[in-house]
Image 1: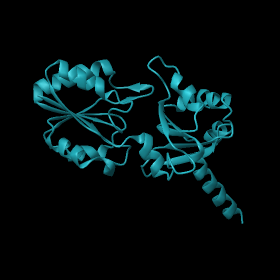
Image 2: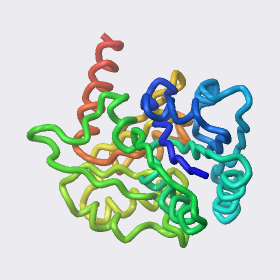
Image 3: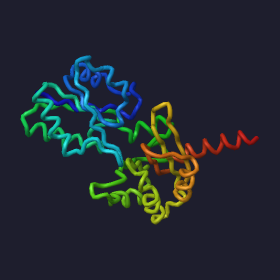
Image 4: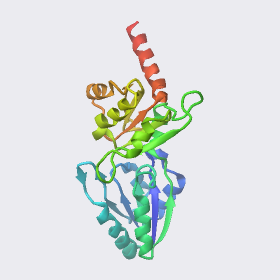
Length: 248
């Protein structure tokens, strides 16, 4: 019996690791999430059992409390289970909970890291999270805690000079921008990237004070990454330059 936790990367199926592909090729069962690209299932053996256990806001095929015992069940019944999760399983992916639950039931475990959307999606949009003279560090914060509230860490992050990346935060965008505004950051650049690394990637850029209006105009929504900080201003400057060029 074995559980292998595999990070599928940010969306583009080519961004999974070679080690992750090898695990998929060896799996007896693959339990995959909503943000996992369907092309990755082509690496599975023809006889492998594929089980969708996706969780998206407002649409749950499986609760986490159901997924943990399912992992144990499939490992006991079939042997090798690959749990395929978007991004990196240990970055807001609840992967550690699944590994611990499996271990408690005597199942061997392995973790294969994946590219986290927190840094790979901004990179795909040509936004560096750190760059000399602009940003020396970055925070990655969840948009919603287990209790459904904003993280207290967001207040701390908003007071720093670091780039702040918020995951799973679009439904609380107004509240998040209010936190930055309260700390004198109304003019700070913001970039929001939907479907990062995929062909249908969309992005809107603005500032804390006007990004909500720009999001409404653009139609950008979930799944999306929010980047707040001066590095987003590099993209804002680029967009403004293109706009001026088009008007000329």
